[in-house]
Length: 381
Ligand code: PMP
Ligand code: GLN
Image 1 (cartoon, rainbow, N blue to C red):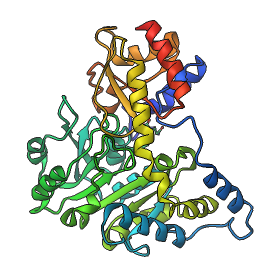
Image 2 (cartoon, rainbow, N blue to C red):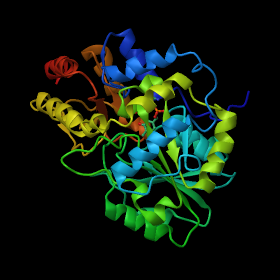
Image 3 (tube, protein in one colour):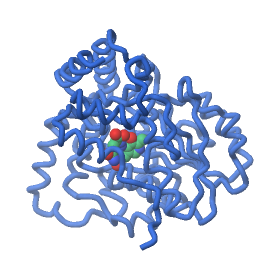
Image 4 (cartoon, helix red, strand yellow):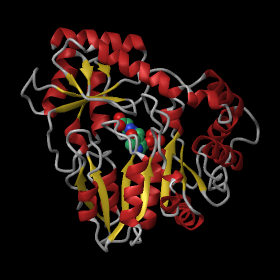
């Protein structure tokens, strides 16, 4: 069989979680919390899971009451006109499905899609599966922010879409209002669309705001904005996300979504609709994660790891050159198997596997988990 992705192995997140399990390592590799979603949400799910009539297919675009709740929340959080739940919001099976549906909907064979690297591992392969050509633009090596001159140089008449991710996985870098203005200026004379992956929208630190593409009127007109309840509610296993886009773009996403998953789990959508109006939950997330970021950094202060600044998301990048000269994949493997702490090598976020000597820790963990992991790391480094 001729593989459509001959150069692609198993996702690094599966590989490292499996290795962590085999070696009983503390898993700071794959990004997921080791605490549960809020009790009210789990209770809501239990209630809806036993409610007669909530067991069959949800409407294809998502439950109306969940789309309405998202519309209100979006208007509240970003101070933008409420997106129309009927024509601008689609519930998907995680942001993963939304990413795939957007790419399948808009990328024609031969189209170019700009991807800023390092990038989340599915972007490149999902573009290629549509016959598209990922055009990789490096983020600045110092702070992982876009170099807009490089983006401008990479734009061509064949650029169908540019993919942005703020806060950024794996670095946590966040786009500013000025970044969005610059992008809007670059795209004004083009038909290029924007996919803005904002799954970590509620994890921005040090008093900074998350700036959404939705807040920029010229960009919102051409953007698909993605989020994930997995991140916002500590529920990565629920696999519910959504896409907000203007009606004409939403219509195209739904053409694909209806044949990809058709609809998302019904009781799960009801449960999320029950809790979404409670703003206190997501308003508390920046402080909650900032405290974990700061605790983990403090715990690693006297080790040989050099920690990079973390403006957002729930990942800590670290240079390890004072500890080891190994390639990052090998270093991550040894940390997992010999030290008992699983991490992700950042080369997994580059299409060509380039190695900057960086590893990624996920700090979405109980404080006690972070303490135990840090103890093992301190003994080793
Ligand atoms: N985009 C980014 C940047 C992510 O980090 C993740 C989660 N790993 C996703 C998309 C996928 O989100 P979900 O789990 O909702 O499918
Ligand atoms: N987004 C998560 C991460 O970056 C993992 C998601 C997955 O395992 N596919 O670690």
